[in-house]
Image (cartoon, rainbow over the protein chains, first blue to last red):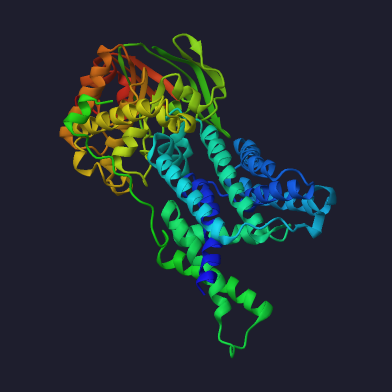
Length: 298
Length: 258
């Protein structure tokens, strides 16, 4: 049982990192990215492609965050021209397009069969590793949230016209957010590839986007701790449904649908009764500096 | 920094909102812009700050046309405005809104934010912003709500906050859209003092204002806009005794009523 808990926690930690990356975009910057699975897939396929071509595995690890960042910048380019809702639809299209390409072109990473047999990293290693990554990303995103950069992106979330009137280019900040978020999301994809020991288009499907959105909405958009809690809650629902009593008249595909139903219902309940999520966004207090601070110790 | 607009035309469909507006706001002066509701004052601000594209005419800063600069680029040139309906970030605290405003933040670049060589500069910049923000809160009488979300403020407080944000930017040219509307009289005097103080530093200020006694108190000259055209220009005293102004702005009334 405890081994099982470790496994569940490992997966939840991987998703925590993905949820943090979506939170930077949606929770803090207000970017409606419905193709978050794209970044997840970029990381996974960086590992898959390298393994498929029997290249040294470190190449995949190094390439993944860069691929994610480039993918983010790619998504940022049309943001200058598109209204935010059209941009949201475009992100959905880009994610599906990427999967269509890797699925149909067998020479990239095995096509629709995918790439199997990636050497596993045991949960004994992967759990502390991903907990460390999640902690670093959490700390970095909290620094960002409280910084001047964070103030600008939180203003973009509310009122891009105000941002322009204050002399800031919303495009530049959105691009930076997408690049960073893409890099972090890709790292989560790397971890998932090593955890499942396979890379295939089914793994990085639109369902992943839905799951990570549920984590951010349920946990608390804009709260970096909240979305980690959301990742554990959603993951808990996901695996908890496996412990249905034997006598329950539901199994197999029906059970899979039941999970989706419960997660969907949890999202609706949160939106209706606790709109800001389980842990609402934390206020950033900038208290009056003490006179000694003003004297300037540097 | 002086601001001039020449022959500005702005049409919305068949309606001509600005019909050949020209005015000059010299450096080191406070220029008033008055006119009845719907005369095009706020639209003129929108056009000057490139928020709305103009159909004809040219906006120049120190004699240089701003061309088709983006609103952000216009603000970076030092041309900053406030809005009639205040724009603030409601999900941030009041003090954070003020800290946000000043340009060229050290912590505005992700690279600098995480560079060990910039840690001290970022921290110093943040402290300086925080210190100035609290001084501005004291000046505007908002210190007791400094740590509240800006979304919880009243209309008058929002107006004060938005003016505070503009003042924190110390812009060479500042366009204020009805800065005193909804603000209590004591604080109006503080705002007016802050506007007049800008004159000494050679800054340019344009104020849209309905209160004629405020115009008389702070403006060096005033333009009167009616139905998209400038109908009078002069010192506040000249403007308030102009027959056309009285009939356009105040309706057909006795001169003494002004």
